[in-house]
Amino acid sequence: MTATTLPRSQAGPVQRKFLVGGFALLAAVAFLIANGLQTASVYYLTVSEARTQLSAGSDQVVRINGVADLSTVNWDAQALRLSFDLVEGSNRLPVVYHGVMPDTFRQSESVVVEGSLTRGGLFEARTLLVKCPSRYEPVIAPSSSS
Image 1 (cartoon, rainbow, N blue to C red):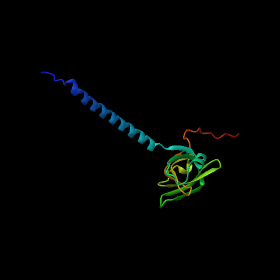
Image 2: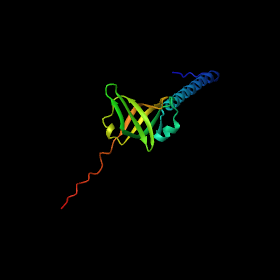
Image 3: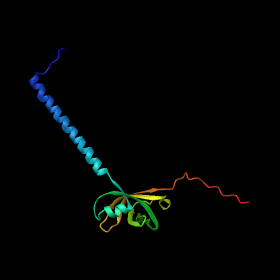
Image 4: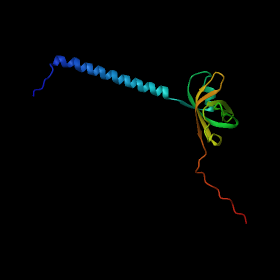
């Protein structure tokens, strides 16, 4: 069995083609990763930051953390529409969410909504996450009176 080797003049262009093809493939993968990270990144804001930084009608998708004001909750089970105000201190943001209301929504400590601000200043949430009180809070035994 004999090994065939290409003359030096033919090996150069073949190696260059593989190098150029490899760099092109690497550049394409890097572009896809960077583009995917950019479109998948969602900014996380507080209610006060959202009030000052978001412009109404923009398509910017953000996550906002706050407390749901339970006195403003309006749940339409037929239309699967939940509306409430998200509060942080004196700042309020009206939110509407279309979907099933989480079981623990009314017991939540805080709420995280993901979506965008409409032209009317209403935050339209596409995702609703609730943080519930810890189950590991210490139980206080009743005091025994004599």
